[in-house]
View 1: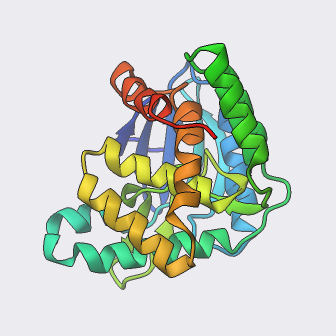
View 2: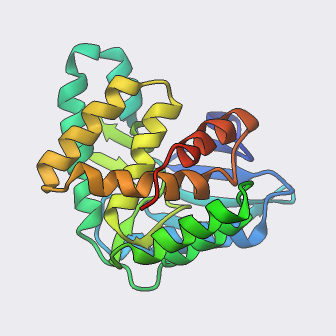
Length: 249
């Protein structure tokens, strides 16, 4: 493979373009199990019929693991929102429609969202009483089996030149309650500093899906606690602030 054109650099990985392929090369200390799980997730999501880059192979490159997928030519929705601020609402509408199309799918072999969140809450840097309250709240939430992206944000959607959207990065995919996925996206807008966008997104999703805002808000402390396990100190502090302010019934 000819890896001289970098498309993107993310924590622990670098993505290259090699002709009609995208090659995601992971750092040498990256968990092999996580890499293989990401490839497996992507293959399982392919089977749902959603518009995603097809996986072409898993290999090693100079001693580092790599996932090879189709290269999709276009711009991310995040880029388009930045370049065309007057069209933000229009893109947001499409963004919510794409997320709802994900939630319509089933992939019964994906990890269960509740299992993953229970595990993450147990690892979170919070006191035992709060962990207990979060585990209890999580257990009380309705059990669903919808496909959840787990990191759904505008930079993970590529729009081709002829307007076709493709959804990227399925490393966090699970099956479970769609409102947990929405709570995660809402927090991602906040983390990006786009608080107005976060509120617009939440209002639009609730309206389009006929979901009560209060129901999604019940997920926020659970999702924030489970996400606080990864990420830098600043992100952790921000996410844990959402855990602290919750009023438990």
